[in-house]
Length: 338
Image (cartoon, rainbow, N blue to C red; front, side):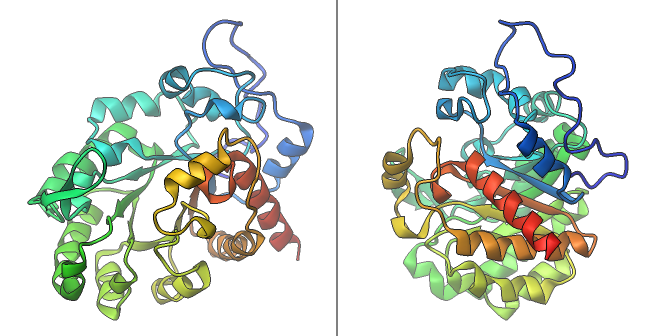
C-alpha cells in the first residue's frame, strides 16, 4: 500500500516479534481474511482513519479496551499494525500548531511505509478567531497568511515527519456569509499560500473547503499553477462526491487526497448528533455503499495511473472508521477484479 519501491508487503510480519504483555497498548490480532484483503491492495494506496484514540475499537484495532487518554498517548504504534492502516489524519494539528519535535515523535512510532495526512492549523485556515464553543468572535489576522503557514505548519511538519509526511491539507473553515462574495480575493491569497507551501515540501499539498462557492475556474487555476490538488471533502456542507469529481478531472493526472468526514443524513452541523448515534464506533450504523463505490473507482483510477492516494475516514462517516476502511478496501478490490 506504500508508494515506495521497497515497501513492506501489506500482510507483513509485524506480529512476529510481539512486545511483552503490559508494555503499552497492544494491537488486535488481524484475521487471515483481513490480511489477505490487505495483501491484494495496490501500492500507492494509503488508507486510514481520523485520529486513533477511540476505546470502542477494541477487538477491531486494539486487543482490549484502553482509556481514551492512553490511546491518545500510546496507541499510534498499535494502530499502525492494522493491516489496512497505512495512513492517519493528524487532526490535532488543526487546533494548535505542532512543533517539529512533536511531529518527529509521531514519525518514530510508525513503519517507514506509513504516511500522515496533516491538517493545517486554524490559525491560518479559519477566517475567524473562535470561542471555545466554536462561535466566531473576531476576524483572524493570520487567515491565509503564506509566511505564517510556512512557519507554523509546512516547515515543522515537513521537518518532523520527513518522508512519512504524505499530504498537507489546508482545510478552509466555513466562511462568514459576508465573505462569500469575495471568493476571487480569497483565492488570490490562497494561491500565495499554496505556491509557498509547494515550494518548501515534497509532500502533496491539498485544499479542502466547506463552501461550494470556492469551486470556480479561478480556484482550479490556482491549484494547477501551484502544483496543489483538491481534497475531496465528503461532508454535508459540500456537494456529493459525483459533483466534486470534475475538479479532480480538471487537475488530472494527479494524486488523490480524500477525507470522508460526516454522513449526509446528519446535515451540515451534525457532528454531535453523529457522535451520539454512532458511539462507541464499533460497527457500521449508516452504511453508504454508493459513496464507497464511487470513491473506490476514483482510487483505482488514481493508483492505476501511478499516482498516490491518501484516504482517511471519520467515525462519523458510517459509524466506525475501521469498518469503513475495511468496506472501502473490499470495494477497491472488487473494482480491480472487474
